[in-house]
Image (tube, rainbow over all chains, first blue to last red):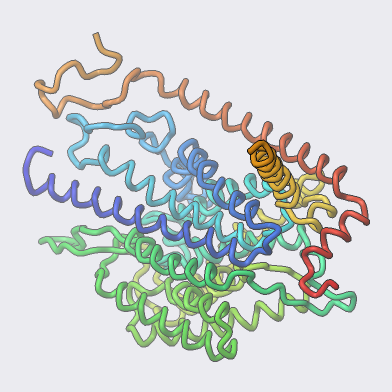
Length: 455
Length: 77
C-alpha cells in the first residue's frame, strides 16, 4: 500500500466485493418474502423466523469453520493430496479482524480477507435459504437450523473447495467448470433439500388417499412475485461476486489485465451481464409456455433459466445462454411434477426443481457446449468435457447434496426432532401466538371500555 | 496505556498489523463463541419443545382442532 496504483487496485477490489455483498443481501430479503408469500396465513411468522435466523447461525459458523474449509479442502483432503495450510482463514487468525496488513502483506490480503469472507458468506445464506423454502409449514425450526448450518457452512463450502477453486481437485482432474455456480450452489442445495424432504414427508393434505397431489397455492402472489424480483436483483451481486475484478491473465512475457472467473480464466463483466439477462429472458419465455402462463412458475422459471445457464455464462454466446435457459426450465418443470407424482415429495416452493434440477442440467450441458475449453489457465489441468461435468453434477447434487441432507434428516428424525407435532401442524404454527395476542388485545379493549364507563 | 497494539497514528503505517484490542486473545474468543453457539441451540430446542407441548395441551383435542379449521375454512357454514 505504498504507491497509488497498487493501493488503488487493492482498494478497488475491496470496494467491488463490498458492493456484491450489499446486492446479495437482496437475495435473502427476496427469499423471505417468497417463502412467507407461499406459506398459509397460519404459518407466516414461523416461516419468516425460520429463514431469518439462519442468517446469524450460518454467519457465525461460517466464521468459526466455513471459511477455513474452503481453503483447506481443495485436495479433498485425501483425493489428490492432504489438507492445505490456511492460517489466514482460521477463526483465530489475526487477519479475520481489522488489520492494516503490516510489512508482510504487500498484496493487501489483510484488506481483502474480510470482504471475500462476506461474499462467500452470502452464498452460504443462499444455499441454506434454498432448503428453507422447500420444508416450510412442518419442520421444527431447531432441526432446520442445524440443517442450514450443514449446507451453509459445511457441505457447499466443501464443494466450492473441490469445484469452485482455482486449485480444486475437480477442476484439476475432471475439468469441472461451473463459473456462476449452477452446481456449486444450486444443484447441491436442491439435492440437499430433496434428501431432507424424503425423510420429512409431505404436509398434511398435500396428497389424496390415492396419492394424487393437491396444489397448496401461494397465499400472497404479490409477495411471491416481489420476492422473486428481489432475488433476481440480488443475483446480479452473486454473479459479480463470482468474478475476480482485475487479474493479469497473460502467461509468460507481458501483462494483460482482465476480469476473470473464479478459476482465474478471463471473462468480462459485459459478457456475464448480457448472458444473465438473456438467460433470464429464456427462462421467463419458456416458463410462461410450459406452465401455461402460471405466474408463480413463470417467475420461478426466470430464476431457473439463469441457474441453468450459469455454469458456462462466462463463455456462452448470449443466444446460447437463452436457449440453455429455456431448455433447463422445461426440464426442471417436468421433473418437478414427475418426482411429485412418482415419489410423493412435497417441495413447497419448487426449490428442488428451480435450483436442484436446473443446476444439475446446467452443469451437464456446459460439458457439451464448452467441450475442449481449458478449465483453468494452469498447465496440466483436464479440459472441460461431458463426462467430467456429468460426474461433477452427480457429486454436487448427489454426493454432497442429497446424501448429507438425507443422513442428517434421518438422524434428527430418529431423535424425534425433525417434524412438528401433528396437532400444531393442523392448527398452524402461529396459532398459539395469535390466540395469546388476541387475548392481550382484548384485555386492552376491555380496560378502555372500563375507562369509558367512568366518564 | 492501550488495550491494543496502537498507541499512536503517527508511526509507520506499514508496521501496524491488527487494529483490534486484546491481540493474542483470538483463540480464547473463538472458544467462547463456539460454546455460546452450541448453548444457543440447546436452549432454543428446549424452548421450542416446551411451546409445542403447551400448544398440544391447549388446543390439540379433535374438538378444538375442528373449531380452528372451521374458522380457517372460507367455505365453512
